[in-house]
Amino acid sequence: MRSDHNSAGKNSHPISAALPLRPASQVMQLDRLGSFHQSRLSFMRTLVRRMVQENWQINSTVFDLDTEGYGTVVYEVKAKYGTYSYVLFSHYLAPENRNDRVIADQWDLTMALCEGTVDTEQLAFLRNNVPKQEAGRVDSRVFVLSRGNRSGRTFEYVVDELAQGRQPDVDVIAEVGYLYRTTAAYGSGKLGMADWEKVRTKHRDFARPFAAEMFTCFMLRHFSLQHADYIAAQRAPKTAVQLDDDIKRYFGIGNSTGLGMAPFLINHPLLINQWIEQRETALARAKVAGADGIDSVILERFQIATDRVIQHLGEIMTGDVQQNISNAMVRQELQELSQWLLDEGASIVSSRYNWAELAHYAEQSWRVETQEVINTMLIELYPELVDELEELMAVDEDQHLIPHMSLWELRGLIEDKYDWALAIDFSQPDAQGSFWYRSQEKMEPRLGQTHIDMGVEKQMPLAIGRMVRECYNEVCAYMVEFPQQDVAHFILQQPNLSGAISRIQTMAQSHYGDIRENLVHSDVLPIHLLRCKLSFFGVSKFDPRSRLWVRNTMFQGAPLISDFDKPFMDDWQFPIKPVLSKSIDSDR
Figure 1 (cartoon, helix red, strand yellow):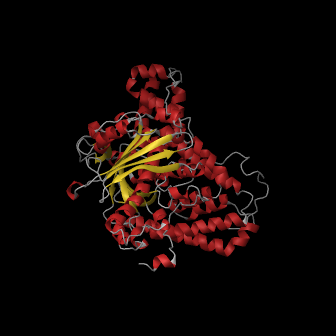
Figure 2: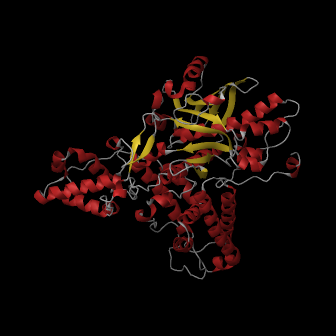
C-alpha cells in the first residue's frame, strides 16, 4: 500500500480516458461473484433514493385490524408518475401450519401491489385470492404478489418489551435483524399479474428491474414496524411505548434464499452481464476519479467507511463456521487497511497515491472477499459518477442466431471467448459429479449427485461450459469434412445445437458474458450464485445455512417513510447497531 508514487502524466479529467474495466477472466469467477456486496446500483438502494428524492406519499387508507393484529390494511402510494395500492392481509397462523418453504399454503401475512386505487369490489376479489397465493388467481392490475411470516425469535419479544414501556435490547435485535421475513415475491406475469412489458412501459415508477418486488418488501418492513407498535398498544394501552426511530431503521426484512434463485443467473446471461458491466463501470469511474490523487475529504470518508464495515462484519451473527472465519479474516485485513490510513493519511494525499494502486495491492495481498469490500466502498465515494448508471440496468434479452457466420469464425469465437470452458476436462468423474433438476415435490430447483441420485436424464440445461465443449467438438468434427460451410448448413445437420450456438454468438458480443465456472462439478458452490444476485438486489448480512441456501436481511438501515421529507444521506450500506440516547437506554 505504498503512498510514495506520483501519478503525474495521467489524464487530468477523471472520466475522459477509456475506462479500465476489469477483464471477464477476473470478474466472472464464481468465488468473486459470491463476494459482491450491496452497492449504490443495487435495486433497494436505487428504489429508496427515488422514493426519497421524489417524496413519495404513502398513507394507510384502510387499517382494519382487530386487537390481535389480524385484518386488512391498504396503503395508498402516490409516486411521481402514478398512484398505487399496497394491500395486505394479516392472518392467524397456527404453530403447526407455520412453514417458510415454497410449498407452504398458509402465512402470517399476504400482500399485493396493485395499480391505481383499490375499490370495494376489487378489495373483496383480492381478499379471496391473495391469501391463497399460488392457489389463487389475480389480474393484470396486480404487479406483485407476496407473503411473509413473523420471526419466532424477535416479534413477540419486541411487542412484549414495548407493551411494558421499554425499548427492546439492540443486542437481541442484532441477532436476527427483522420482525417479519418474506418467503416469496412473485411478479412479471405470474398467476395472471401484469407482465414486465406492461410495468416497464406504462408505470415509470417501477420501470427498473425488480423495482416493484423491492417496493413490496420495503412496504412489508414498514408494516412490520407499525404492526409491533399497534399490537403492543392494544395489549397495554396505558404503558406501551412506540419503537424508537433509530431502532426502526435498524430493522429490516428477513429472507432465506435457496437454489430456486440460482438458475436465474444462468438463464438470463444478458441481464446479468448488464448488471455486472454497470457495476464494473462504476468501479472504473471511481478509480479514474482518484487517478491524480486522493484529497483529504475523500480519504476521511473512506476511513469512516472502512471502520463501519469492520464493525458491521463483527456484528453479524451466523452459525456457519466458514462464514465466521471469512468475516474474521476480512475484518483483520480491513483493520490493517484502517491502520495504514491513520498512519499514512497525510502522505497518501501528498504523494498523489491513487485507488488503482490500492486495488492492485489488495489483489496481491488480501482475500477476494476483502478486495470486493474495498471495491464496493470505492463505488460509494463518487455518487455523482455512479448514480446515473442505475438507468442502464435493464436490457432486452433476445439471443439471435447468425446463420451466415462461417464455421471457421464460430470455432475461433469459441476458442477466444470460451477458452475457460475448453480448458475443463469433462472426462474426469468430478467434472460432471452434479446435476440440476426441479423437484416435483418441493417445487424448487435442486442439486443432485450424478452417481448417486436418480433423475440425471431430466436435468436442467445449466451446464453452460459442458454445452459449449460439446458444441465445439461437433463443429470441429463437422469441419473435417465440410470446412467451408456456415452455421446454417451445420444446424441443418445438428438442429439440437441451434440454442447453444445462438447463445455463444450473442454472449460473445458482451463484455462479461457467462459465468466462467463448471456448474456441474462435484464441489460447485451454488451459494456464490445466490450471493451474487442478492448483492444486486441490495441485501446485507449473509448467513449461510449450507452451500445451498443463505439467510439475509433486506432494507436493514434504510430510511423510514417518515424520513422522506428530511435531509437524506444515502449511507445505509453495511448497517451497524444504533447507539441510543441515554434517556431511552435507561428505560430498560
